[in-house]
Image 1 (cartoon, rainbow, N blue to C red):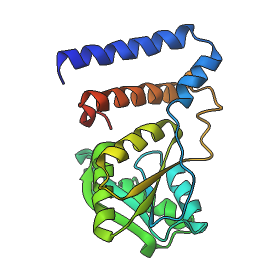
Image 2 (cartoon, rainbow, N blue to C red; image 1 turned 60 degrees about the horizontal axis):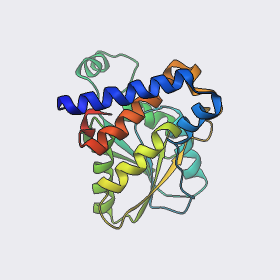
Image 3 (cartoon, helix red, strand yellow; image 1 turned 90 degrees about the horizontal axis):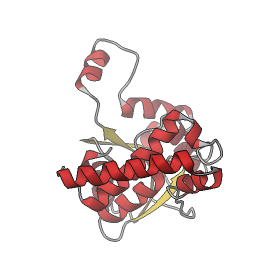
Image 4 (cartoon, helix red, strand yellow; image 1 turned 180 degrees about the vertical axis):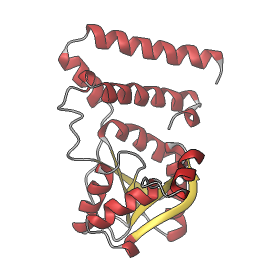
Length: 214
């Protein structure tokens, strides 16, 4: 990352922080809503659980599966740190992302044979959707539903438009029970951090340094 890119990202972060301090509630809601995009639902070849937000994204994906929108549910192989893998090997109850996600999906009515677990480890949204795109191309899929959290949806939409092979449509759907838009995201530390992270991630994409952001 160049020093110019760092300065620009810091400037964006400071501007957002300043706006959060002085702006009134409607403006803050607008900042949050600007991150949210959602496509109309349509039948697809597969439903993709974008990594993160377990169990809500898996529950939303399972609901779409039960409603008949696709016959397969895709799980990426989100990178598991070495220390976590060692704990799992020692019998720790925490599973890796695919293991945790699979448990939720199966408990919510998705049969094991309908779960497509991708083998390639990924660390970022860009890498994840690139792998999903290649898997879709290899299987002859033409449309997938990308399930994610509201604040992550705009970046997912943008990344898919850049990473997916030609001719494969990605419909972005957000977790319906998420309280991001109605819960005052600026009052909740985790959601405020998520908003800042997403804006920095979008800036990084346009600056060509997006692999630095998950």
